Length: 360
Length: 175
Image (cartoon, rainbow over all chains, first blue to last red; front, side, top):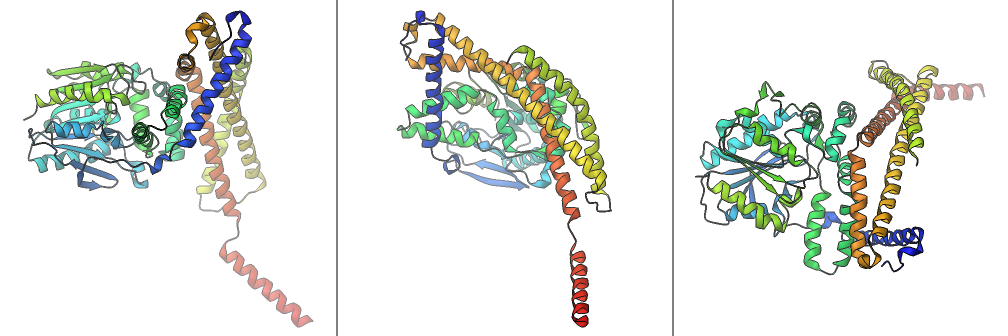
């Protein structure tokens, strides 16, 4: 607590501030010592079956909790960064919300890529894995078209997929997808412009978690590493809070390596050359033309997204030629869109409502 | 760290980037050598090249690291000054709660460091630092490969052992 008055001089004041700041750092260190190791944290997921497997990729089908109301199935395409279970964190589970609204829900779990998968490009991920998963979902549900939902990088994959295979997609939902990277003003966007990606991928083969953590650390270091852990120190006896906190911590510190060739194309073509929004991105033998997307489109964007600039994501609504397109903008952050009590109250009921109106 | 010192560091970095290219060339040469059919060991010429490239890259790596540290330190000092000014402007009575000071501290430092991390100056320097790191990894691999190639093969060891045995027999006969 600052007790001295201004007239004592700024030097005295700054020493007091420094002492308090030191306490903050000590608080963060104390919290890290008190918390259990992240890898020992258990998390329960919504019951599901693995209905298709290929390499490290698994297609999960979630067990219905409500009487199925809609015939059109929903396939969730997760990102290659971190793990899919952020959408299934207890008490804030997006998957449970979707099931409770009567959707037959599937999700692609990318798993940890093997050494063979390091060489695979976005083409193989989109026209290979995603396409085969879509076909499996169509076959199981006996539906010619499905609803496709892409999260972050998965949103970009879903966008590319819909532009190339729109005959298999009935509705498209994207959550914070990077689309127009010239408008990306985030730390990652800035770094991506200068990254000599060929050097990086040629040396490492893939992008190991340690490098990803370096980028994550630079996003909001003081809030996420000082503020957050001090809050934990104050609530260390609140078991419910700590359990929820540790589930999110586990997710934050659990990321597989990103396949090198996918990351090379991601940084070079999508971030540095910004080819996607210019309708010049080459995927396999085809060029992705976003104006071919004419299915009903819902784009969910966070106002305070520090990972993907809202302006970058919003570009999808300007480029897709769908007559039925909606942009939902929420006053929250990237993770707040899916793993917060706010998203359970504000985001997902609206998303489910939008999808219900457009599903059989 | 003053702006002048940072400019000086920047100028040194520019000079180093020239030698960085020569380093890469030297490294590529040794890479090609290794991938050839003939196993090579450390001789006077490539030993000199390896030492040279490693030293140049080491210098580049640490210059980049020092430059990043200088930028971080500058941001830290500026953020601390900003915080002191904000606290001074806000009457002490309004900041009697340590939580207020914590949030003021976090906001001030976050703002300063986020703008630093987004700046082209920091981003380009960090990316060059990472490139130097990649170069070091490749050099480490090169040195390991060359070192492994200099180790005697199984045949060499066996032949050597046989010839030594022969010599021992000869000595015994003489004795």
